[in-house]
Amino acid sequence: MSTSTLPAPALDWAPPDPTVRRRAPRTRRTTLLIAAGTIAAVVSLFLGNQAVLVIPFLFIVSWPLERLWRRHPVPVRRLALRTDLAYAASQPALQAVTVVVAVVFAGISLAWLPGLALRPVVRGLPPVVQMIGGFLVFDFLVYWAHRWGHTVPLFWRFHAVHHSTKHLDWISGFRAHPLDGIFIAPAIAFLLAAGVGNTLTGALAVLQFFVGLGAHLNVRFKLRPLWPVVMTPEFHHWHHELAEEAHHTNYSTFLPLWDILFRTYRMPRDERPQHYGISEPMPDGVVRQLLFPMRGARRDWRRWRTHRRDRRHGHDAAATA
Image (cartoon, rainbow, N blue to C red; front, top):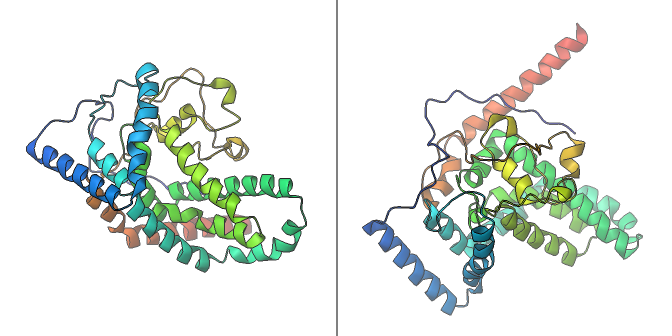
């Protein structure tokens, strides 16, 4: 299995300096938004939305780590914090959209067909082998879904929302478009159809979510012995690095093994990731970011198909020469 990296389009827009890490200014609009968001969170909590409690819980757990072992001097009330908090508070609604679209996407992907074909074989395996095999297959498929999210322009338009943050910390991992998550739906459909238990697949999806949040922490410890074994904050920070040489690296969710095998592993010993974000425009605010991928999506899809066709014709011409 292989994929290709598209040439970056010429930009007529200068991105903001990602090294700027300053406190967000206090304005009347900001105060009103914070007040409205707080009221909405309290009301939704009384209505039974327990997910809102995840935000203060994560802050209590993460804040000491980011204060004691801080990597970058980012203030607590940093720029775009309210956008990421809004993403966190909107998770129940955004996840509902993700589930509905993911079910449809998993069905039309037909990934469940090979799963059904393998079901008798999987059911004949010991439970421990099923668990380990399911974990490895899930991680392998998520690696490729994530990689395609960077190399296919249509997919990147959705995934770019997550990468648009210029600060990696305890709350930045929540910034993600709800349709970005559907790219792992075929992997889950494959595992379920193959007979891997709902408990395992559900646990893997939840574990992926929380491991992803931890990988964004603004912490400086390297955990170097774990680099080739499991994903660490250092590993994922390189994935978000803005420098060109770090593009298209460190896609793995749990095991860096896949990046090592497919030559996308990057963990330099004498450098640290410093600049985060994307080299293209991204509007501020949740609503505008959720609408952003829809603009020019058809153009990017045609561009990717043309690139693939030209590349295929080039290979055919070389073969017949």
